[in-house]
Image (cartoon, rainbow, N blue to C red; front, side):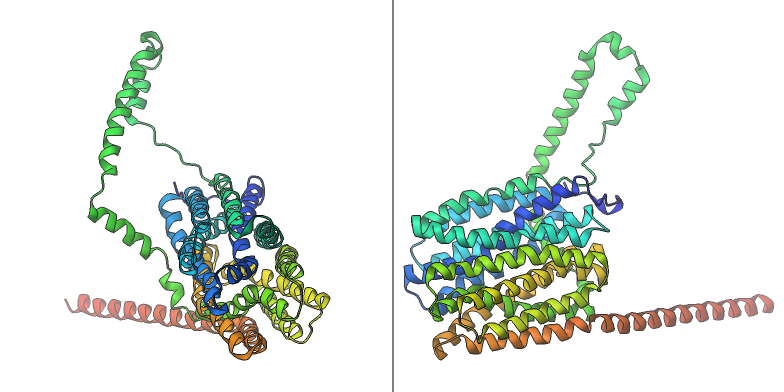
Amino acid sequence: MATGTSETTAPDGGWGWFIVIATFISTFLSSGNFYSFGVLYVAFLDAFGGTKSETAWIGSIFLLTFVTATAVSTALVKKIGHRPTVMLSGVMATTSLLLSSFATSLYQLYFTYGGLVGFGVGLAYIPCIDMTSKYFKKKLSLALGLGMAGTGAGQFLLSVGNQLLVDTYGWRGMLLILSAVSFHLCVAGALLRPLQPYQPIPNKDIALKESEHGDDIDEVGQGAAEDIAMSERESSEKENGKARKCDLRRCAAFFTSILTSMYDKEMLVHPLFLLQLLIGVGQAIGHATVSIHVVRRFRDFGIPATKSAFVSSFNGIGQLIGRPLLGAIANTGILKPHVLYGIAMATCGAGNLFGMYVESFEAQIFYITVFGMSMGGYFLLIPVVVNYFHGKDKIRHGTSMVLQAQGIVALLTSPLAGYMRDKYGGYEQAFWVVVGAYAVCTACAFSLGAVDTYFGRRSRRQADTITRTISEAGNLETLVLSEYVSTV
C-alpha cells in the first residue's frame, strides 16, 4: 500500500542502503537489458536475415515501451505502492523473455521482446529511484550513483554473458536463461520497505470493550474476545468480497485515474522543464544510436565478432565507474548539478567525434569507455537536476517524462541510423548527427541556471503584482465602506 512517506525524515542510511541494492538490481536487469541489446541485434540479424533498419526496430520499440512503462509505474506507485509495482515488473519480464525465446520472426520479437520485455522491465525503474529519494537527502546523489551503477554492471556482464550464452546455447537458450535471471526483480521489489509501514486501524468496538471491561476479559477467558474478533473479521471479509466485485464503471474510473496521474501538468507548461525535455530529446539521439549500432560499427572496422562483443562491456564498465563518480562529485556541491550535466554531455559529443576517426581496437575501447562514463553520468543526473530545480516531490514525474521524450525520439532514431548505414555504406553520417545533438544538449544544460533565474524573477514579479493588486483592492473596499458608514 502506498503511504505518504514525504512527512518522514529521510534517514540517509540504515535500510536505505538496501534500497540502493534494490535499485542496483533493478537497473542491472532493466537498463542492462537494453544497453546489451547490441549483441542480440547481431544475433537477430544472422538468424532472421532482415535488414539493419528492420532489426533495429526491436531495440527502438523496447526503449519506447520501457519509457512508457515508467509513466505507468508512477501511477501504479500511487495506487498499489512501490513494492507490488516492482514485483509485477519481475513477473512480466520473466514471462515475456520466455515467450521471446519461441519467436519465429522479427514481427513476433517486435511484440514479445520489444514490447512486452521493454514494458516489463520499465515498470521497475522509477519506483526504485523514487524510493531512494525518500530514504536519502544529503547523500541522495551518491545513493543514486551507486544504485544506478547497476546499469553499467548489467551492460558489462550481460554483454559478455549474452555473447557466451549465444555461442553456447544459441539466442533462444540465452533468452530462456535471461528469463530466469530477470525473476530477481521480485527480490528487488521485496526490499522496497516504505518509510512509514502500513498501520492497520484498530477496531473501535473491540478497543472500547477492552477499555470498559479491563481485566474482566482475563476472568471470562480469551474465547469471548476471540469470538468477537472472528465475527468482526468475517463481516470485514464479506464487505471486502463485495468491494472486489467492481463493475465496468468502477474499473473505467480506476484506469482513468491511472492515466491522469501519469503526468504533471504543472511541469509540462514550465519553460525550464520544457528545456529539460529538449535536452532529453538530444540525449536520445545520441545514446540510442551508439548503444544499438556501435557493435555493428566495430564489425565494419574489421574487428572480429568475439572482440566486438566487448564494446558493450566496456561501455558498461564506463557507466559502472561514471555513475558513482559523478554522484559523489555532485554530492560535494563543488559544481552545480546542471553544470556537471552539461560537462557530461560535452564529453559524450567529443568522444564520438574522436571515435569516428580511429579504427584500432584499443582506441575504440578507450572511446566507448569514456562515452559510457559520460552517458552514465548524465543519466544519473536527470533526477538530480529535476530535484535541484523543481524539488523532491517532482522527481518521479519529472524523470519519467524526460525518459518518455527520449523513448519517442529513440523509436525513430535507431532505425534511421540503420537506414543511413544501408544507404551510405557506413555510420559516419549518423554519428555526425550524434555529435551535433550532444552539442545542442550541452548548450541547453549550461543555460538551465539562467533560464531558472529569469523565470523565477518573472514569477516573483507576477506574485508581487497580484499581491499589490489585492492590497489596493482591499484598501479601496475599506475606503468605500468607511465613506458609506460616515454617510449613514
